[in-house]
Length: 427
Image (cartoon, rainbow, N blue to C red; front, side, top):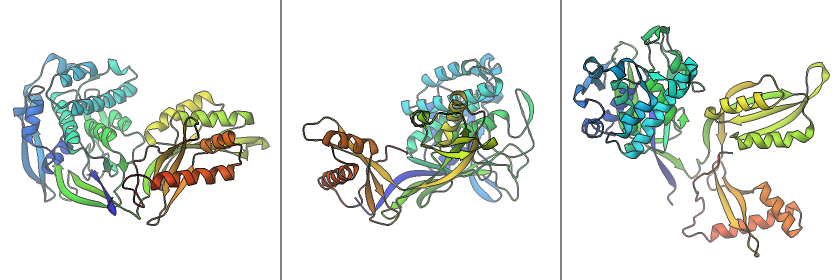
């Protein structure tokens, strides 16, 4: 292994917002795919000849804009009344997209349908997608899915998403920006009120980033290999209505092994929980997706002793875990806070228990913040099981297990100091 590890990476910069056509145009401008590839994959889905690529400028920045005339000439009854999710899935299944791109396209439309269902208080299957189910949106989403599949980026970063201002007209009337579906799609993600007096982020754009983005904020170090500019329809002398896409490789040196991400912290107090119920509560929180959970004692209102729970979750899991807390615990409220987290690199290791016993011992190899540093952290369950099997204390158990892991690591083919395996666990 070399001193550096590279990962295929995209960086989405929604300078002037993001829409499906802006993202797709940026992908074409960056060389990820071509109009010819879109024509071959989507020709049976929409009349592709009514989509053209134009070279234009926004605030003196040159880029690509998709010019679509699909819905000016291609109306039908299903479109007028909106497509259902099932109808969209049937249409995608029948086109020439690769299977991976089909799965991505369906997942993006499922995300949109779920948001619309929450906004309108109906089931996902009962939602009729009007603007988002139209031919141009179908083209944009399926084209974006194809681009993501062809690029095969393992990490996709995105900057803060601008919403815009003013009002937008759509099938349900005139609403202030952001439209309800956009706000629902961006729930839990970093957004900012935009400087431009129009809708800067559309439902298709919001759904694409919700589906694709793995990290928020800029990467620590990236080698840029291609750049694409996807242009919107409006022009402004000071604020370019464009989306910039950077394609390349994420560079992590041997001494830069820690990572940053965003998590949500949920905190709540319970003053009538028996102490014996603490462990089961924390165990279930971890089982349903919490990254970490713990409780501390405190004194609450009227001098009552209470337990304060702190739960860390991925942003996408926060709503479901918060609902479980409100449903299953005695609390009647909780607090949510978005936090930036820095964590050391780690990978999961296991070694056979040996001695004729079944099972494996488990540990994490944790990379230190300085080059060449690493330590083995034995899983507590493995320590407990070793103590039970061999009737020794925890100190001896950890020493013996650490020796076994060191021996196993040294015997790995091609082992070099600093080698890392893929991380399998967030916690």
